[in-house]
Image 1 (cartoon, rainbow, N blue to C red):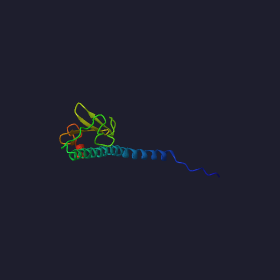
Image 2: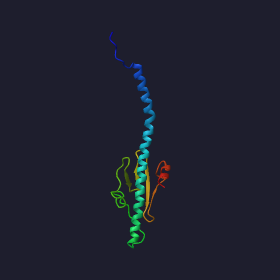
Image 3: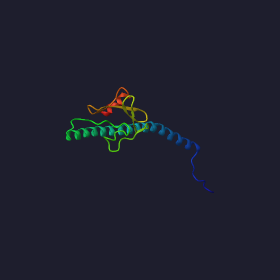
Image 4: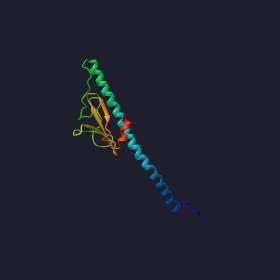
Length: 142
């Protein structure tokens, strides 16, 4: 008598597909939150570099005997005068843009836009809590 090869039944296959679906439904929201956090971490890194660049510019100005001065942040090639190659520009996630109407720098995360003000007189590059929603995002840039 010939032995039939072992195979999965239809019920077993359906059970496995249902279990995989449940696992995917649980894992997907966690993954999208991680992507958002990664973009915010990228923004935190850029802001740290920008702030350091502003202080370096100030120090160089003092050493040259020009007094305390801070640079105008280049609005066409964003931050190229305080970052080596500037920041990536555009309106996609992970990119910066500049709104001339409100005089704000904007970092796009995909789900949120984080607004920043620059005060040239004081050399302060700060998160704008009035335009950033939720405003609690600004807490991560202090």
